[in-house]
Amino acid sequence: MKVQRLGGALIALALAMPAMAPAADFQDVLDTSAMASPLAAKGLLNGLALAGQRVVGVGQRGHIVYSDDQGKSWRQAKVPVASDLVAVSFPTSQQGWAVGHDGVVLHSGDAGATWTKQLEGRALGGVLVAHYQAQAAKAGGAAAETAAKWVSEAERFAAQAAENPFLDVWFADDKTGFVVGAFNLILRTGDGGKTWQPWLDRTDNPQALHLYGIRAAGGEVFVTGEQGLVMRLDAAAGRFVAVPTPYKGSYFGVTGTRDAVIVYGLRGNAWRSTDRGASWHKLDTGVTEGLTAGAVVGERDVFLASQAGRLLVSHDGGEHFSPVKQERALPAAAVQPLGADAVVLAGARGVRVQPLQ
Image (tube, rainbow, N blue to C red; front, side, top):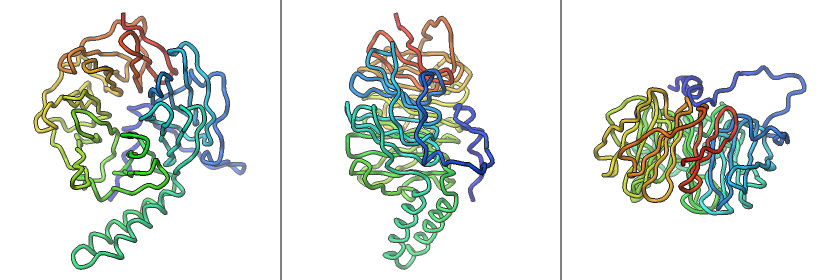
């Protein structure tokens, strides 16, 4: 049975929203375009990505901003929803995806200047139910009981309509990608988001724990979540398999180099593996607050940022981290390196550029 535990975890990530009673003139945020605002780049922004040389940030009320001058100035994108957006991924300079509350998946084909809606919570339940009903129709024997379980789970999601958010998105290229979210919500696409295949039954996550992050690192694709959940994609089996770690608190994200994967989360915890998650080494981060963002640039430079705004950098592939000197530390939800000289940080007060030298 699902436990309504999402709010506390998302508050830690500055993503929670208060419940509002619908008014008589209520307009669904899924049917409302994001409002143009000169302050869009100064409001809450939760995710960052590079679209070629362009920096793209996503955040509250459907706001998406982008910069073509290394963060000196920002323009607002045209977005068809006013839902809070949480994460963004650009596998190429032009093709990108953003996800967020209300089960929203958005796509851009012009480097983030304009966006279209590919999936949203009101339709998500139907996608899940149709998929698992089709599986159940083909199942027999002992498999029939398992298939019926997933139909029931899909119907539960459908009954909740747009209640469940997506919390991260990652694309390997302009065709293949994953979106992950609350209560083991995970879907895969192989056609650039034209269709989505549910993977709820393809995870080693029997408790339906929330999935907070997904990235490629250490030569593999990893998913992180609450209660110490880490999973690695077994491409041959077509599923995410559990990877035990020594820490049982929530991991908010995953990053890493070609040779190492780093998972990070509550209370400054960060762990590193160079053997696909078979063993882990705890990193000395020097912080006690939650680590909410991570990114890598080049072969060796890794960045971590905390909810208190502290920024850490490693120049040895994540083996050792040191603090970056800042004039002021502001809560950070995302970090995006701009080469070796600066990073963009995003959070409750918008975006800002942090020089590294």
